[in-house]
Image (cartoon, rainbow, N blue to C red; front, side, top):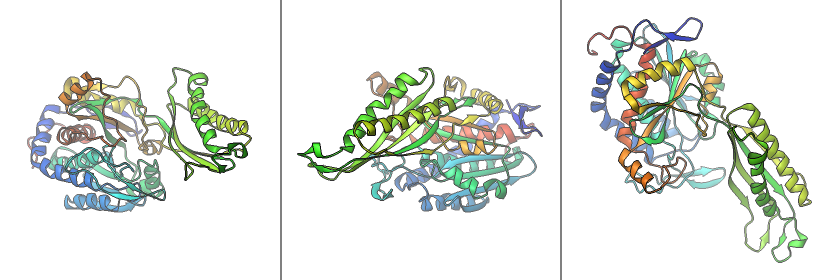
Length: 440
């Protein structure tokens, strides 16, 4: 249940097994001592979220904690990113990544440490919330660093801890790579990242191969002719065009795409007009296009563009302004690394470590590191109280959804599970054999 990097950059079973039970006991003992500080960190970050590429306070907080632990810390990598390096002898170079940013959502969790932060997003004053769990991830990231420093006599190699900005914008990983991440810090032999999910706390979900979807951004402007709301015959109504497009574009999903190929087109924002009795001259739409393979992605993009132009033509309007922005690529986990790490997860978590039957519909720009040649294993950790989740399901309520105003993982079991899983995953690559006694 251990793996190592070969000279060819591939993966093969190591000659010795990882003593999962022994390491688990040591990690859990360390967590008992560290958890109060991790809980305080989590609540501070949750109460003070920052939007993509504006994460100055968050980045400084994490950088300071890593310096206190003795790591070599570099700030402002890819604008607001942080890289902290821990050298501990010869061995693989392993990346451990977290995200820094929140979302422009007003928090409605009712938590005593709920966010009341506000910021400027796309020119508007907006509330800000950690509604995707990045605050959980950051607490885990620090916890993993502390655990691995505590266990430094049991492993050898170089750990590269990456705090990446702007994941929600799909631009942070690209920015770090463009800022010379690999040239400045060395190309990792492998990498790990986790994400809290609406699963019972203590559960781990993993999968080799395609793990998350492609995500492309859609910006669309219908241009018409404005006028008085009582005289629509003298106008070309862009709101009517937008409404028709939102409905008609779904036929691309239901009638053009293979039913067995995942694909979604969602419109999340529509902006037009300023008064109820005025038909505006233009209407702007913003959305997302999701898919798991290049063929479906191409069909969806072509269908979106064709539908938008057809809707404008039906209204006698000029061609719409269409911008498709390539976002996150699909996360494709290294099969051998996922298999090796999955065996460690099963040994540590028992039947709570599950092999995912299909990829997740959401997207992740961690894929940029994979695209840059870093074999990786991205996995999910459960984040919610098991009994509360079961009771909600029994009442017919949907599972908690990220990117909503009430998304609130249960901190302690989520953070403990994440630290345990990630520390074991890293040890599965860098641990020495055999484990000799307690750490110094």
